[in-house]
Length: 64
Image (cartoon, rainbow, N blue to C red; front, side, top):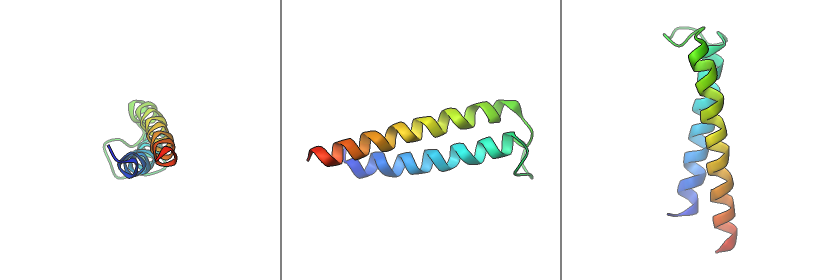
């Protein structure tokens, strides 16, 4: 797979993870996720997976 795919996926996952965390903590309102501990837990996990994907993409891009 191309390195840019990992980097793009990583950016999207980090942004979604941060949004879900903010919703779960109640900082972003207007959703069923607002104030839910479940989304406050899932969000950081998704963000960390995004960071991992970014690192993989950067490493694969440098080796070529």
